[in-house]
Amino acid sequence: MRWMETIRLQIADGNRNKLEQTLAEIVQDACEGNVIEMKRYRHATVKSDWMILLRWESDGVEPQGSQTGRCLAHLLKSSALVSHSVWVEEWESVD
Image 1: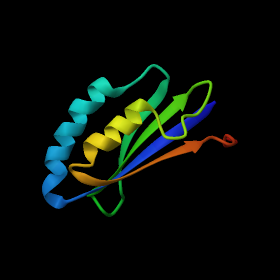
Image 2: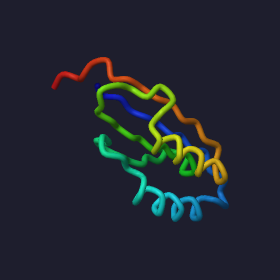
Image 3: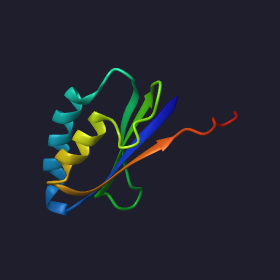
Image 4: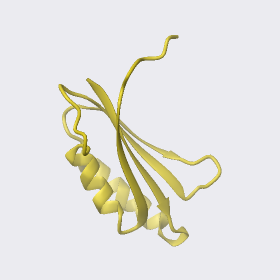
C-alpha cells in the first residue's frame, strides 16, 4: 500500500535560518526502511511556508503517521506552526 504524510510549516521570519539548519540535521537521521521519498517544498509566493512530504510503501497505513513523521512534527513545533496529516493513495495518474 502506498501512502504519504505531509507536514506543513508556517515559519516566523526570524526562525527560517534556524529551522533550515535544524531540519537538515534531523532529516539525515530520520528515515525508516519503507520510505520511498522525502522532499521539502516551499510555497510559490510565501517563502516562509514549507511542506515536508514523506512517501511510504508498506503493508498498511499508519493513520496517526509514521514514527519519523510524528517525531519531525513534534521537533518542528518549537520553531513553526505545524500541521501533520496522512493520505492514502487511491489511484495513479495515467501518462
